[in-house]
Amino acid sequence: MSHTLDVSIVIVNWNVKDILHRCLESLYQYTHGITFEIFVIDNASSDGSVDMIRKNFPYVQLIANTENAGFGKAQNQGIQQARGKYICIFNPDTAITDNVFKKMFDWMEHPEHTKVVLLGPKLMYPDGRPQPSIKRFPTAVSQMIILLKCHHVFGWFGPVRRYLAKDFDYNIEQPVDQMMGACIFARASALHALKGFDEDFWIWFEDVDLCKRSKASGWENWYTPLISIIHHEGKSFGQIFSPTKQRYFNASLKVYARKYYNAPSQIILAFLAPVSLFLSYIVSWLHIKPRPQSRV
Image (cartoon, rainbow, N blue to C red; front, side, top):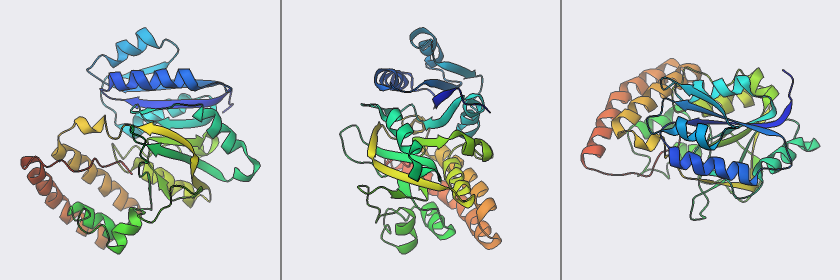
């Protein structure tokens, strides 16, 4: 595929019209010095998002799905049409305050970074606090503990601590296993070689799987604190009732386990899935609001 632009920005939207509006405004306000295009794939929003885009952002490449296709499949719709040398997977609940896409473009163009195919910037909460965005690849044991909701209590436990990368220094530029899918700046050639996201994942783990396949192919994934964006965590998926989120999580974990874990681990995780669903009902019934889970 010939690349006629520098960067293609691909955003999947679901019922976050106002946040998406602010996101798009920031992209057009601060992005300059590169040629770029923006795709918004709307997953059958009911809040007027499509009309808002058509009215206020006529240059956006809009794909309006008639049903919710999930994150990975919708992202692939934009990736397949993207004309950029680089493709940025970008969430609508993000915003920029400077020319970050030019910075990420220049970073990837550096001769020392030719093996890097996925780049993650520093994510910041709206109040300026740094947001945890890096994890190591999930092991079967770490996911068993998470299904049992014990990671909130046993966050110090070895497998959980390693998975959550509690020791990660967000002030140091370094190679990583996986980064949060809120912003992943990717070489288009590599992304196409990897065939984009695995559409067996409807939501959750699709970005983890992409990062894992990238490293398995001999490429590198990197984090840099020199480039930062604002991320309003979990605004789209936060609208869904907790047990429903748990079902989606469990379904995606099952796909991930089938791809990367042995048979005994798959059996144990399958046994724990209904337990996790029961626990999520308890949490919802008690109106406990745990910290939003990211999709990495």
